[in-house]
Image (cartoon, rainbow, N blue to C red):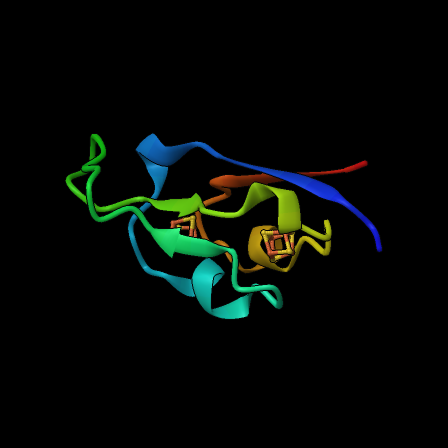
Length: 71
Ligand code: SF4
Ligand code: SF4
């Protein structure tokens, strides 16, 4: 299966959760322990080893927080 590396520019995340809802492997979550510069819990990747590089999350994010590299 394809592999990907997903990274978040967490300081510009607005906590909408859209990326979490579209990840087919369910590896994204809101980081309830962190609060970013905007005052939101930012999205994060909890099982980075299971990213398939589909880029659904990056396409869905309205604020261009997410970068996906295919490996
Ligand atoms: S690239 Fe695909 S598999 Fe990887 S985190 Fe984004 S939606 Fe999930
Ligand atoms: S879609 Fe973008 S702005 Fe919304 S929670 Fe995910 S990373 Fe943050």
